[in-house]
Every structure is written in structure tokens, then in C-alpha cells.
Image (cartoon, rainbow, N blue to C red; front, side):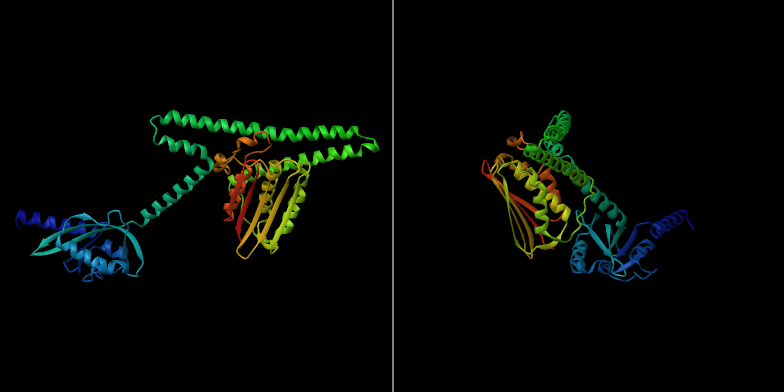
Length: 402
């Protein structure tokens, strides 16, 4: 054997070894799409025994829904064969012997022998990569959602930064604004607790001085002031606790059969202590009384909406509460004759800590409606409102009756 023959034999053996031991699947087909050779990796990939792929058409490795179109694509490729990657910007899938599908990457090449064109397909199973991509995609979605919920103000600043040349300085400015907002909130919360505590302290001191029988009216007046202050503090604490639970994902909807009319009456009785002189709550219920509800969440929603109606309405004005249960939905409506919401600020009403300019002298945390909105999200409910300055506001809540 000559040196040239030995060299040629060595090259052929090397190519054969490369074909047999390649980790990629390699399949060679003729012009009619029949498989004339398949390496062990491709047989394992598609679930076939050794030699089973021989003489099958390549369409038997293609998902049934793509079989007809693949024949046309193959014929088109044979007319103009060239090295290329398949499925650019498209997800490709292959079919195993048991008809299960899996994602693949395929690169095509060709060679010609004795006037016939043969196509070489290099195939990679990318199932694990797709799983990792999906995990990363889901993780990114979850992270983006959390960022949107926790840093709404900062998100708006970041959107502006995308088109800004002074990215660093604007980011620092946004961070300062967020810290200022937190500081304002701490100050506001301290004030909200200080006011009812001062009321309780002064009223209790005065009750101690009214010892005569004729002083009973005065004592009752201050007892009522204490009750009202305690109710206010309870509402504030409810807001803080609800906000924290929602933030930490500790709030779960627990539905049970409950009487909506009874729950509403209990809440109205509980909140009666903070009514201003001359204020009155008119309550009307229509439809069924019972429905599947999360009683605690519904109580919190009612407490927020009705207490807001009381706070933002003047003395001697009625507040209307309406509930209705039909086959499809549960409706809750609270209407006041209060100061209303400025039109230019209505878009921000459900943002955390937001308080309209015309309520700065009225107690409140700026958390209530944000909490109501999140509770309704958890129950697939909706909240709408109509408001006009100095005429009043109506909030309408709709919850599916499942």
C-alpha cells in the first residue's frame, strides 16, 4: 500500500469515526428524502434502534402537522442546495418514534456524488436549553412584576432614563425622591396615631373630672370621642397590616358561604362611631343574601370605602351603601356627597401613599384604596368610580359570583 493510499484510508477512517461518535445527530438523505445513513446519536435522539432509520423518509422525523409543508420545503432546497441553518427566528420541532415531540436546532449542508445531491442534517436536541430559557423567562417576568409593584415611582423614572443622556444623575434624583416619600410617610403615620391618642388622653382626663350626676351628658360625649378615636386607630392599623400582608404575599382568598347583608350591617355598626354630626348611612340590599365570599377581605374593603365616605363628607350629609347579589356577580356601591376627587388626579387614586391635594388636612394614610385594589385583583374583581368636585363620589365594586 502506498503512502497516499494509507493517508487516504486514515482520512476515511477519521471521518467515519467522527460520524459514528459525534454527539450531534447526523442524518444523510438522498434527493427523495430517504435516509441513507444515520449516526448513533441521531438514532438515540429519535428513539430508534440501530439501523431502523435506514431507508425511512425524513418526513417520519417531522411533526405530523408540518409533514406536507416539509415535503415542499425539501423539494425547494434540492433545487438550490446550500449550507444554512434551518428555522431562523422560528422554533423547530422533531418527532420521535413514539410520536412525542422535542425542540431542535438543525443545520443543513450537502454534497454531490455521481450526479445526485445528498443532504446532510446536523441535529441538536435543545430540550434542556429551552427549559432553562423558559425558567429564566418566568423568573424575569416574576422579577419585573415585583419591581413594578414595589417601585412604581422608580419605574417611571427609569422609563424616562432610557431616553436621557444623564442617566446616573436622574437615577440618583429618583432614589432621593423615593426616600423623601418614605420619610413623609413615616411623618404622616406618626401624626395619624398622635391625633387619636391625644383625643383619647384629653377625653379620659375630662371624664375623670365629671363626677356629678348632672355631668352624665358630658361624660357620654367624651366616651363617644374615645370610641371614635379608637375606631380611627383601628382603621389605620388595619391599613398598615393589610399593606404589609399584601406586600409579603401572605394574603390568600378563602371563600366560604356568607351573608353579605349581615356582614355589611356589622361593618356599618362598627364604623358608626366615627360619623360626623348629622351624618347618616342609608343601606339597601337587593337579590340573594348569601354568596361565596372571603368575609375578612370584604370587611376590609367595606371599612375602607365607608370610612373614606365619612371622612371626605361634611356634616349633615347622607352616605348611601348598596349591595346586590345576582347569579353572575356581587355588587357593592358606596356613594357620598363629599368633596370629590380632582379630575387631574383621578388617574393616581389607587397608587400607594397617594393623597389628593384637597384632602391634605384630613386624616388618612394614602393606603386604603391601594389595598382595596389589590384585594380585588386577588378575587378577579373590579372597582370603578365617578366623582365630581364638591358634589361627591360613587365607588362601585364588582366581584364574580363563583
